[in-house]
Every structure is written in C-alpha cells, then in structure tokens.
Image: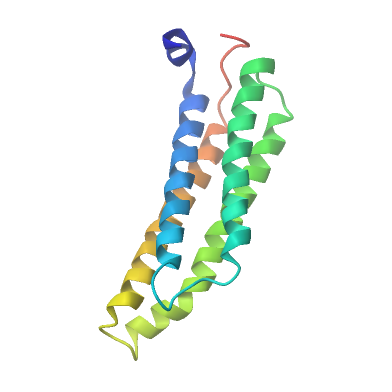
Length: 146
C-alpha cells in the first residue's frame, strides 16, 4: 500500500484533490439546501450527478493505473468536468434569487445569508475541482502498474 501511494504521480494527486473538493462542495450544497425555507428545486438529481462525477473520477484513475495513459481517458475528463460544471451552475442558479433578496430588500435575513454563503463556498469548491481536473489532463499518468 505504501509503495502504491509513493508511486502515484501528479495526475493521481490532482484527481484525488478534485474528488475531495467535489465531495466538500456536495456536502456544502446539502447544507445550503437544508436551511429552513430555502430548499433547492430538484436537488436529488444534482446530488446524483455530483456522486456520478466522483465515481467517474475514481474510475478514470483506476483505468489509468490499469492501462496506462490512453487518449480515451480524455473523454472521462471532459464528462467529469461537464458534470461538475452542471452542478456548479445548478447551485448558482438556485441561489441568485436569495442573493438578490439578501442584498436588497431583505437585509439582515440570517437564514438567507447562511443559504447564500454556504452555496457560494460550495460553488468555489466545485470550481476548484473542475480546474484541478482540467489542469491534471495536461499531465501524463504514471507508467502502467507502477
């Protein structure tokens, strides 16, 4: 196990960080959704999309370890980034109305501010995950079964 950890390259660690960031974004999205009176519409679909993105990220790393650096792994990268950006857009779309209310006519609404703040932090983590995955696609995976 220790040799496995030592032998992983930059792509593996960037992908691992992206998976963790996606998971943190998912948790924060659920926290934002849990604010009383500020539930997001159709959140179940986007929770599933975020989980699928994490699973595809893990699958792409497993396939890279098994088969080495193959061009078809870029398809996984594109799909994962698209799924994470879809969830990112969902979070922002569902919280723009809260932001407009909190910043204009409903100042001092603590629950609204909490829903907005956790959603923004969630969006930042999703954005960081998408950037890390994109950056990792420019590097080569380590050698097959290293």
